[in-house]
Amino acid sequence: MRKREEIERAAFSLLSEFSAIDSDGPVNLQKILVGIGADVRHGAWGNEQSRINADGVLVVFLPQHETAKQYRFLVAHALGHYCLHFYGSEVTFMRGSGRDVVEANQFASALMMPESLFRSVWAELDGDAHKVAELMWVSTAAVHVRALVLRLEKDERAVLG
Image 1 (tube, rainbow, N blue to C red):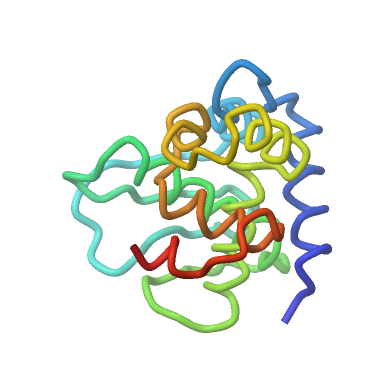
Image 2: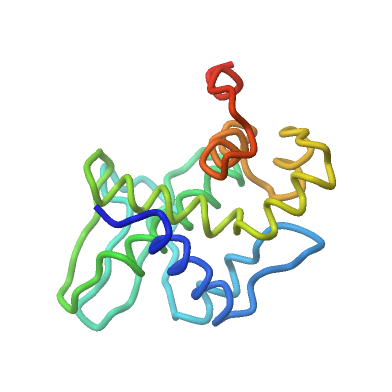
């Protein structure tokens, strides 16, 4: 299992490479997708979430009837697999659990809520998770988890509701 710091660095590197951090709004995932030449497909795909072809092209499968925030998470999660789990041959990532999924989730969180930006927004909005979620275009639950991971929030009950 990779350390959190390694995953954070990988996410920040991707954000920096494509100038995807905007201090006035959410991280621009579209810039990254276009920059790497990803193929995003909408429809019913079963358990398949993403695939990286042998030539290194990321294909993201977005299911029907999800919210924009859920789509953003799925894209960020797929980018996590792309950055952390591609070793040169075709690979398909399915819905499920396991080390790779946990790492891709951590990457997605770090990608959509980069640490320095998150800390700044958290302080500016007095730790109001709902306002932070609105600004960063993520779920309130994701904000609480990120705040816990970064030790900005100490009460796990806030995450559990």
